[in-house]
View 1 (cartoon, rainbow, N blue to C red):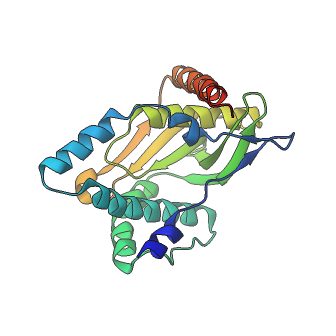
View 2 (view 1 turned 90 degrees about the horizontal axis):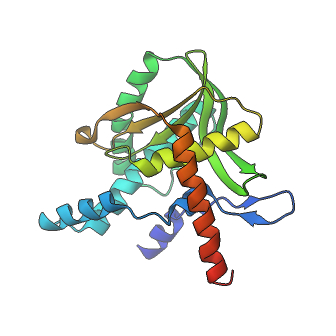
Length: 218
């Protein structure tokens, strides 16, 4: 069982700048933020007698599979799902129905899918889920498999917007497509606003991240 779990741990993308130095990724930087919604969620499960660790791992697997399936669909590149159970793959396929229903009403023309980018100006990296023409509009699409859209997710896509623009890609709209991992989590198409303010929050997180590393002597 331990070996199977270890195989499922996906290596983080390493972002190397022009000088050959590794820079932090967007999600690594945002780990400095407290996540009160996660604490409330764990407490609620505990009150129901549910082991939040096991529940989280199972839901995380379903979410990861659904995310990979969306990327496979858009990029036409095969994703490796061999480490996941048939039952989890079936559940992930079921939760994709809402995404495919959304796609029927929207014209998606992918330009970049699962593309790693680096900011030489701000010295951080990140991997874009999908940059596309959505109904003719240049759009950053980020896919989340969760029960809600949280502020840190919008901080994240604000950082991705900066990455795209610095690398020569114009961004008119930023959207988060939230694909629920079960029927009760539902589906949401969120047009993100106040991107500049969310970018300011991310940039301050980046400053704090570097100061913390400096204190640790790294």
